[in-house]
Amino acid sequence: MSWFKRIKGGITTSTKEKKETPEGLWHKCPNCKNIVLTTDHEANNYVCAKCNYHERIGSEEYFAILFDEGKYFELNANIASADPLHFEDTKKYTERLAETQKKTGLKDAIRTAHGEVDGEDLVIACMDFKFIGGSMGAVVGEKIAKAIDYCLEKKVPFMIISKSGGARMMEAAYSLMQLAKTSAKLTLLAEAKIPYISILTDPTTGGVTASYAMLGDLNIGEPGALIGFAGPRVVKETIGKDLPKGFQTAEFVLEHGFLDFILDRREMKPKIAQVLKFFKN
Ligand SMILES: [Zn+2]
Image (cartoon, rainbow, N blue to C red; front, side):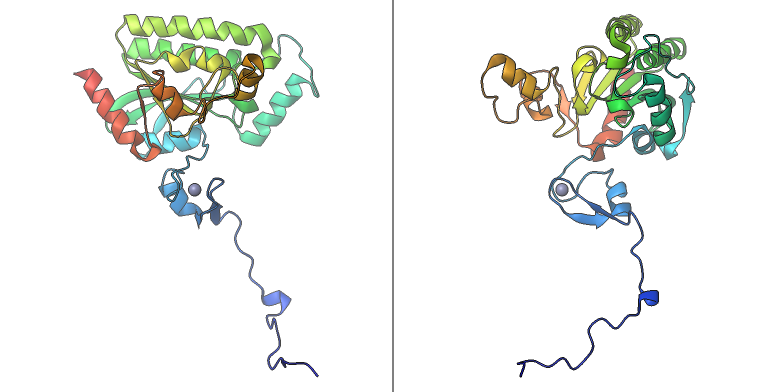
């Protein structure tokens, strides 16, 4: 004889009456596991309301957050990478490019656009990490150079949102040339007294840190972002010592004088507008 007797049947919903939860309705924070509605997460600029974790987002999201009414005019949208070295690793570089373009709907790892931020003209170049790790090849360098030419001609301030693993190995030396190219172009912008703001987001490393990301009139980090040149494991193995706590986070880099300040993404638009107005006067 059992102790309990089931009076009512268990699951009474028949299979055909079951409702599916719509895909992507909920967002789970990868840091604190807090669950919120995707729409609420988006309204909070993809920042966790509970632990302040800044989720990685791309150019589409940044343009929507920063430009007035999400309106902008994209510059040189159709530049795509060639394969000058006929590079091949686990697959051909040309195949990797075609696949990534199809999967992401992007042409390369950066998009440049002109729009208004709280009524202030601004050209933003924003990197996309999902395109081969936001790696910097010839297209990234060329689009930055062309955007700077545009800023010089129209006398519009320039901002780069960096998010990159560094130089693109499939373009080897061509990638490294972009460090000199973008740095030289930014010098022209400085000579013309046109402001350049650099935003460093998670992650900003390698050749990008070694060139345009650290050359801003203002260098601004997002909270918790990994910012460095070589990765922490490489540094640890090279110096043979344990690294200090929080090594290469935006907060650590700020404390050591490489950033001007850290900016919460929810404050980004009003703060950038304020900075632009400040530079104008
Ligand atoms: Zn969280």
